[in-house]
Length: 235
Ligand SMILES: [Zn+2]
Image (cartoon, rainbow, N blue to C red; front, side):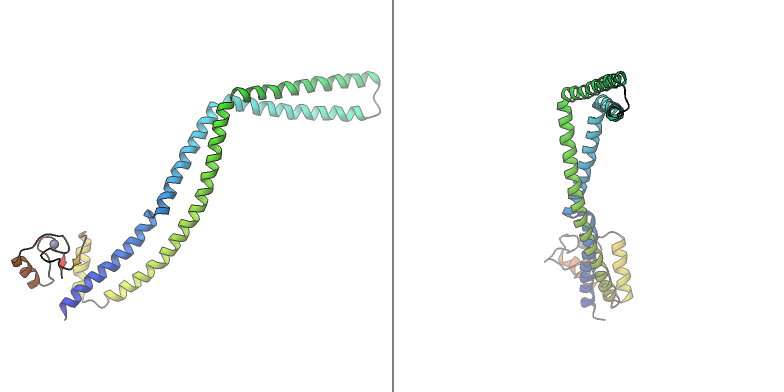
């Protein structure tokens, strides 16, 4: 067994694992994903603001809606009368009667419209603010749609890359002796950040501790060249 060569393979395996990990991480941490999260938050906050705006203007909206319904109904009545007046079968008193009714309905319509108009003016500042909020919300919504598409493409790309690396990793591991596979898995499971690394002069490449020459000698003599401080494989 050519042990030094195999031990350095642990570094390569770790690089592959890190690549896969980084790809998975980038699905939740890429710049676009973070921007998307910020936009979603802005959208939520703005929606809440608009609800507040609507609450503050609720009296205005109730009257407006109510008056609009009344106007619609009155206008239907006016049209009805207009049709009757255009007919030929009315005698003069009926014509006068309908004309008076029509005028009175028109006055009611104007009153209702004027009331809404006055309330609009009275609440114009708040209505303007709400309008601004609604425009901004629409703008954010469009940005969200566009960015979501970009992120989806990004994820699709990542999802197609991961299986390639996983396959590469499996093929690579299959060349490892069992005890090295077990060693790698155990160190990973224990949460070792760096499982295997080259020695940096007297420093352990895994944990960075400064090693004495006696300690280095001890490491090189141990079965898997493991650092006595972190258990990482030192090559
Ligand atoms: Zn170490």
